[in-house]
Amino acid sequence: MMANLRDFELTEDEHAADIVVVNSCTVTNGADSGVRNYINHVSKEGKKVIVAGCGAMSKGESLFAQKKVFGVMGHSEKAHINTLLKHDRPFFEIGDLTSLDETIVHEYTGKTKAFIKIQEGCNFRCAYCIIPFVRGNARSQDENTIVEQVRKLALNGYGEFVLTGTNIGSYGKDKGSSLGKLVQRLGAIRGVRRIRLGSIEPIQIDESFREILREPWLERHLHIALQHTSETMLELMRRRNRVMHDLELFCELSEQGFALGTDFITGHPGESEAIWQEAYRTLEKFPLTHLHAFTYSKRDGTPSALMKPEIKGDIAKERLKQIEALVHAKNIAFRQARRHVALDVLVEEYKDGLFIGYDQFFNKVTLQSERDVLKEWVNVASYEILGECNHANF
Ligand code: SF4
Image (cartoon, rainbow, N blue to C red; front, side):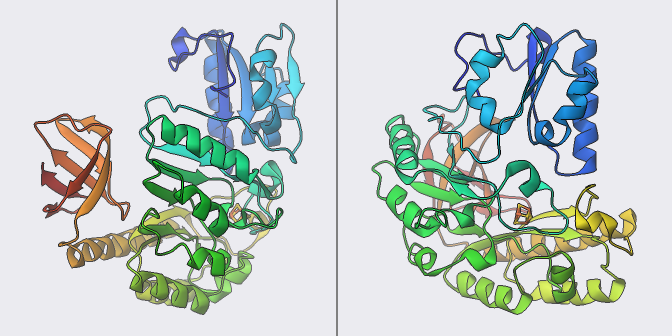
């Protein structure tokens, strides 16, 4: 949206703005109410409010009918933001769920790494998830468009690229290509030093993907979404992954030196104490280093919202804490086992006297340095292993 805005002055300070564009999330009922509250709050300050993003797809119609927003801008309409914001009458432009934004971004304000959206939408239908209904089916960005974008950003000095999308592992399936083939092309671009992949699904790790695993530009960290480690829960959640296959896959990748992260939901309906105990014991066997876990949050309109028995929030929270502690301990053990490996760090931030960045295993590194190393790549051979991060005097 920022790249397409030409005739307006941009501010990230909402008090200084005349128009507020809310790029909203709708993933849980809580996200919806957060968006509604925020819209009410900025409307009261007399701002012209435009709702965009997934909330526009799910709640845009009712917000518009209730005159809570001046305009509704669907995903496919974001490219037309410059024209839409000039409307002097309320507008409802929901667009469609089949197109893909082809905007080429050359710069990211204040960011050291570049985020490349390679696809949109998802063909899976996990029982708890609303995303396919607000993002549509999977469709891939043209390979040459992505290559061109990465080439331009690399020329502008970006070295780290993060590939994003709704379900990036499905990249290329609609175009006779694959994620592996795309990443192979991107890695060959001059100036590309590290490629990080967003979340992928276990069943999407195919032969073409295995071919890139040894490439030096591939981050030594992969994020593979499991969501659960109980076979019963995976079936209830209508997931396509299966526990024994997942475990074999994780062990295979770990043996190749990868740090491995996953997503996990605790407290989905049906997660009895016996199921939980079994899932936890199985999770202990996974060579994990990173975790992105949530307690289940009901989303109206999904099959899971009607499932019983529901699990109490405090039980779900307790289970979340247990697996967070487990993976945190595994992360420290991983770092200790590799304490002689030099870290390749892209420094992203300077805060409270410390430079902060991430290494090739996607672990946080803090640096004390006399020299200004912000936005630089630094190689750290000796460092201390702390609870939350690695630390070095540089
Ligand atoms: S794969 Fe991810 S985005 Fe797709 S339905 Fe499942 S949870 Fe939602």
